[in-house]
Amino acid sequence: MNVQNIDDACRLACEQIGVDYQPVAADGNWHVANLSDDHKGKNDARIKLFPDRQGGIVWNHKSGERQTFFINRMQSEAISTEERARIEGEKRRREAELLQRHNKAAKRAKSLWDNASPAPANHPYLVRKHVKPHGLRVATWERLIQQPDRKHCKLVVENVLLVPLYNAVGELRSLQAIFPEICPELGRDKDMLAGGGLAGLFWWLGAKSDTVLIGEGFATCATLHEETRHRVYIAFTANNLLAVGRLLREKLPDAELVFCADNDTKTLGNPGLTKATEAAQEVGGGVAVPPVHGDFNDYAAWLREQGNG
Image (cartoon, rainbow, N blue to C red):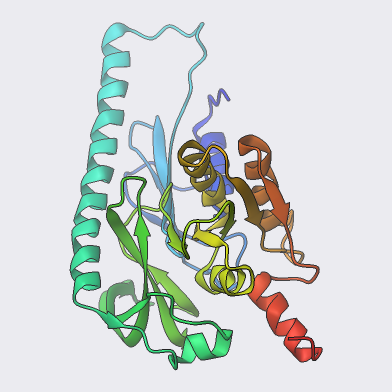
């Protein structure tokens, strides 16, 4: 898609990773924004426009997703060789900086993971979700947060579940934290490692199986595995379902892939089902969706309430 207006390019990037678009200054600094698919996600996003107004970055801090965007000029527009080289050089520089941040986060992830302890079955989150640990680990989670006065302070949360994120060649690249309960400072019970990547990263539960399931969150995928015994891959967000599906189709050309969608009936456009359907269509997979609002862990809870679980 050709986008000639920087505001339109930014708006499109925001839509792709669930950030509420808002105009910001092209000063190369991060500007606070909100999440569009989470009413609790206030100030959980950032938008940056590069000073040359040729592109920028949108960051969903909750999911860890970053979307870099650039203006695509019309072919008929005259661009000098020097200008084209400058734009390409800037793009490569920004990509290199992003990779450097991801590599730094990967080192931190490995250190945290290697020094963490096996998660106990009675961890409050696991008990609340009625699922087993499946190899999760526990550790202390630390991150910087911005206070109302815009100053930063360190947030420390004890007894946090760690979920690893691996790439296609088996390297640990990042971590997701799941807190024992909602963290008041963040207004949620999950966090992603600062600077870590997400696109194309995943984790899995269970041994190899002919039918492979793909879902979003750990609790959802743990429920699916425990109920079906199929191998289940965790994509972490709806926007990452397609990237994970492409990798699995390449690695497992004969497998039956089933995208187990979150049924986001209370969110405009039902992004969980929409993204799962788009991914399934592209990689030749199927779609399963719970008959109630929420994910398959929510559905299992609903069945227990009905006396069927």
